[in-house]
Length: 192
Image (tube, rainbow, N blue to C red; front, top):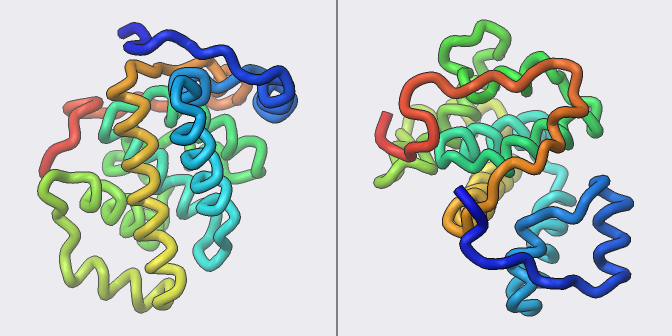
């Protein structure tokens, strides 16, 4: 798949900042910069969402990667795995997110979070009262609300990138452990 909109030219300072932060200019920013208001708002929202701290960072990282695997956003999986390494998260676990149901590395809480992320991503959503109650009991209300909105943001990002034809930029190549591939119907959001 190719980009469905051409890359826009970014202001020099913004390009330099992105290269310093990521080693390259992220293609989602280049694609959305055709409408700077949209690009800036998405960046600001992403920054705010990333600064929330009521829920554990690894749980949110795994949840975002689960959404990306389900929707088929190779760019989000790529950058998510790269960021997991830079945040010193468990790369053995992060690498297994695309096949979390078959993997034995996840705790019961992590499995519930991954199931929740997929349940929110399904159309229609398949989150159950029982799953929500387990997460509420383990995480508390503030963290569950944060996780829920974080997964909703992950859906915003993954679906936007996929619709615009944005694919992996190779960020995860810097990681020692290879990223597993999704088993089953990769790249298809569906009911479980």
